[in-house]
Image 1 (cartoon, rainbow, N blue to C red):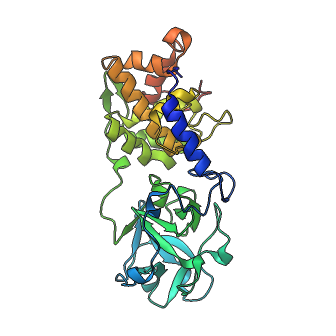
Image 2 (image 1 turned 90 degrees about the vertical axis):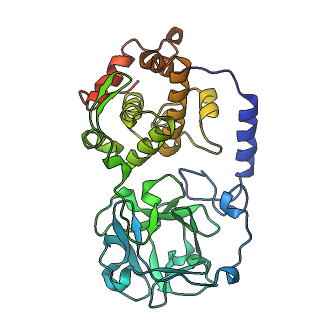
Image 3 (image 1 turned 30 degrees about the horizontal axis):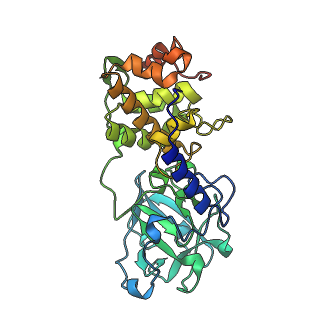
Length: 342
């Protein structure tokens, strides 16, 4: 990946942020805030003081819908302590009706979403338990489309992104762009954007339709909406971003070299194009940074896709690997299905 001039200001900002986030503990391998749990600083949703009484007015009981069109569901409709929570086809039953009452997320039979024994870490299962507003295991808040365990960097998450009946809900490190953590209040009516991107060409490069691209490379399906959203923000076809990920890392979210899905081996480039507090090992962070970087390279090279790709690949005399352009285009057309990456 191309080398950029050292950005002292950006590096200093990241150093300060990392110093702020060095306290407390989260489960090992957190994707968004590694090594951090009970955050009371540096989190945008921590600006206001906690006040359960100020939020005591309850919403109506409504379903909460995932990006996969399933509803948050109490398994088997059991209104009992320790009943598990899953996703299921939306049917309007009582076991799919929820309301926020202060910081409690409760069903209509006074059972609340609960972290068993308060043992929260990546992959912890969730349950319902008799409501107690003073029980921190049951305190939740809405952060955009995420549902966050209050005071922790852990969010309600669809296990492994499997939007199938019976998939359990779990805790996982919060990431505001993860489709596994997006929950719509009420029934969802919008088809995920990743289903609607047509094929054609991008800057002269032929590409297959987006859904066919994802079907051909199922390891990329977890991050499909991130490619679409990042592409929309940068005016770049998601097929190109996906092809770069496949060529650079074979589509693996966190390769052993630590450079991430989009292979930001140059830390100066990462600092220049990633968001504050982003992690190369977080595939969503990497996708958005890669899209910003490609947009900058395209603009710098007068929208010449070949030159921009060679610059992204670098650093062979600023030209990158000679076959890089043809390989990226082969991924976009669907002629390559797997490969060693670069």
